[in-house]
Image (cartoon, rainbow, N blue to C red):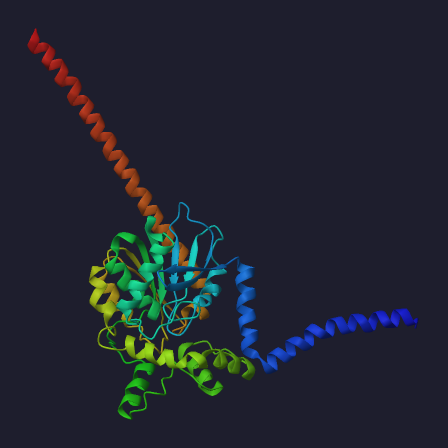
Amino acid sequence: MDLDVLNMFVIAGGTLAIPILAFVASFLLWPSALIRIYYWYWRRALGMQVRYVNYDDYQFCYSYRGRPGHRPSVLMLHGFSAHKDMWLSVVKFLPKNLHLICVDMPGHEGTTRSSLDDYSIYGQVKRIHQFVECINLNRKPFHLLGTSMGGNVAGVYAAQYPAEICSLSLVCPAGLPPVAESKFVKQLRELKESKSLSQIPLIPSTPEEMAEMLKLCSYVRFKVPQQILQGLVDVRIPHNDFYRKLFFEIADEKSVNSLYENMSKIKAATQIIWGKQDQVLDVSGADILAKSIPGCQVHILENCGHSVVVERPRKTAKLLLEFLATQRRKAMHKILRARKFWRICNSAMFTLIYYGTRLAQFDCC
């Protein structure tokens, strides 16, 4: 073989080997870095841009796609110990001309974390309202979507700021008294009785505990490699003290039933989505909401657990788009009815004026 040709193959092989070796090294040695790169790449691929905005000295981090248009903007609130990127699996199935905003909840990811902040559900509602005002999202009513803890915050927000919300989607929301005891609630009760509340199932600190948490949250059994489990744990461990503080605040009497206490005040059109096999928050919560919020739509997903957004992203996006389309048709129907009413009123007024004038002329004669 010609020496130049051989050198070309060696150089080409080395060029290919370098990124492959870098990937393998990252996978084995720094799996948490690989996870961060993965989310960064996914955001770019989906056209989600990350921005920061300040309310006084408090910083919010969010990602967005699209611009406000004729359809309502959609604000997405993630769950406990998650982050804005958890919505990417749903964003993938939403149209690019729909204005989407995914915000890091208070204390999470890029949003300010302070030991002095109020992380109760009501405290988080206040912070999210500050964020909404910062980006002028409430210039016209928007759609609010929340899951788990974020669903609790979304429901209370809709109750406290009804003029800002045109419609609401709650995905297996927290904040309701359990009619039936879920596996997670049972585990918490047992931990409380044994005074071992430092070992909360939703706050893993080892790959084995992470695997157990995934089993608890998902009906679908994902085959996650040990290195990825380690990476997921490595990402979370620096934040576990905060997660414990947050958990005890939202599980406190002030917050634990906050959605239940406010659901009768929700005036916006509401959609409930729940996994039938939810082991964290029992699916019976959907009935509680359905009985208190007039005309709300309820969708129970078969073979789905608590992580609806991750397990059934396509279905979640489909249900959301159908719900938004239904609300838009209803809004257009109201506008058409109002226009028809005013045309009738104007016609009647014109008729009265016309005959009134004729009668006046007749009297003068």
